[in-house]
Image 1 (cartoon, rainbow, N blue to C red):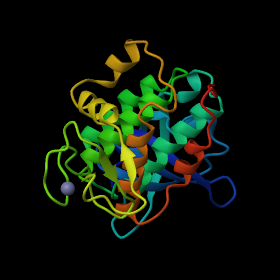
Image 2 (spheres, protein in one colour):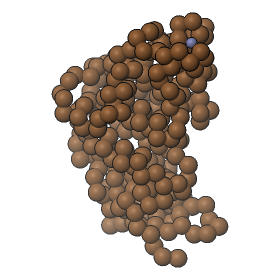
Image 3 (tube, helix red, strand yellow):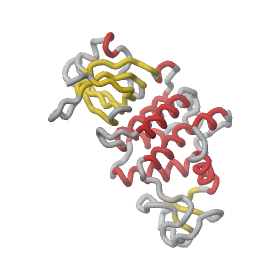
Image 4 (cartoon, rainbow, N blue to C red):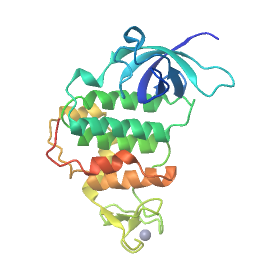
Length: 253
Ligand SMILES: [Zn+2]
């Protein structure tokens, strides 16, 4: 039973007995791992500051056969979101990324593409702009876990949606043309669909470096469509999606 070592992103911690913490890690080596960090609340030496959600760490742990929970022995900080100031909007955005990963990734399944996506988005989320990195993360995550439908044609009639008005519905598995939209559908603008296409061609840094202001309204219809798509697949509401909705447009860190 050798101790394993892996880069990991801390997703969640819950207090357990006394000083112990239940920790969910997204490890690079074997995907999502749940474990117990004994005396984590006391031991600065083994865990000092490394168990804050969305901290990028080097984790030392072992997974025992026939035991659901790993033993998390120690974590060393590689990059901490607390290195820059965390205001309310950024705290919610970080919690949102953590919840999406926790809900969408199966246990013990390696996903290096999602790991790299998360690291690059986390770096951009260190600034005060939250809506661009959150939009980028939701879009790519939906695609990488295989839940993103075709965005260029109507799921009912198959017609190309380029240049025409386009709709989506919480219970439908893709986009629809004006003739096939359901009652109480929402519209997704051609600007937002073009934005999605652009995000599939360029790294998140290129959007951050452009310095363009990114108000909450930009891509809001795309985010609503993505969250509805993800929630339909996991069959539950994402707690942080509602919190994101309630962040005021001008509320930065
Ligand atoms: Zn149609």
